[in-house]
Length: 93
Image 1 (tube, one colour):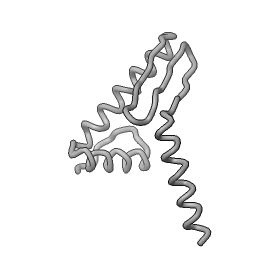
Image 2 (cartoon, rainbow, N blue to C red):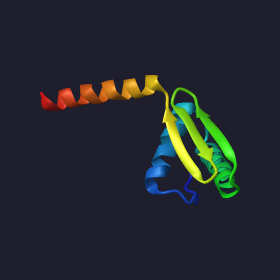
Image 3 (cartoon, helix red, strand yellow):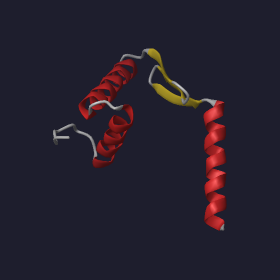
């Protein structure tokens, strides 16, 4: 992939590259989608809109006026908690 200015940090660039590989989509497409989503979120917050972003299998990002909160789905929280317990158990062995 050719280098191009994105305004993203190196860490964000790596995440976008990984997502692009997993989804079999061009990295610029992934970056464009993320930036478009952020623009909508900025608009909602700056204009006091109420907006929900639903992330399938993850949760809902709630924008209410100037407040933002993330509500995670219970299944995801349980899965993360189990994997953390497993990781802690492996590290202690």
